[in-house]
Image (cartoon, rainbow, N blue to C red):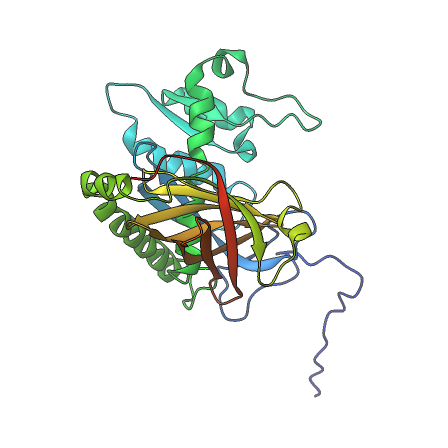
Length: 307
């Protein structure tokens, strides 16, 4: 009696969860994050953020499927639906489906979902979009990317060390809680921070004019390169194909920051600091986590008077 082992030949065929499975973690599923991206074995982490302070109110991990985002959103928002006052839920255009909107209405949640009108009719109509709160929700919603950027890079969840949905889910939830703990001292110390910011001479908008590893054409590739430093602990920076939000700490003539954003649609993050020089310009040290470090020079564009 002979035993013959054969291998299936998938040459020329698309990989899918029906044809391929992880030998080390059966719970992980092949998932493609977007067009042109390769499919990777993944889980999906979901977060629910409260709008006022940008804290994560809930975190949930699921298998990576096309329906997981909407199912997770309903799972996370439902515990908050018994409040006497109305609540809203902001979400991107992937949540713009008739079934999801219907489910939100059934639990009395106002759906502030971005409209998806790319070759289809949106489930979000004028009854929702005409209210000013709709635009506010869509703008604030993007702050959740700061949390995901921190969880992936600082907390190391971009490539988990664990196997199995339960253990990966525990690590993701723990990282989400750690993110809130990092933010809380800044929220609690808001009055002190405001005082420090009032004495900072870098508050305002600065035009980035030079870098040690990039030329001016690259800096202004998409739009004029700028860094904006505001007195509320936040800011923005944009140059080349990169746009990022800043989380800032202040002193009189310098600031330190961590940043989270996108570079050519890839999620990136890092840290840095900026210092006011004697000639009135600003020198910015801008570092990517596990990557390049650049020295940028900026000049005032519009900024408040020095304190």
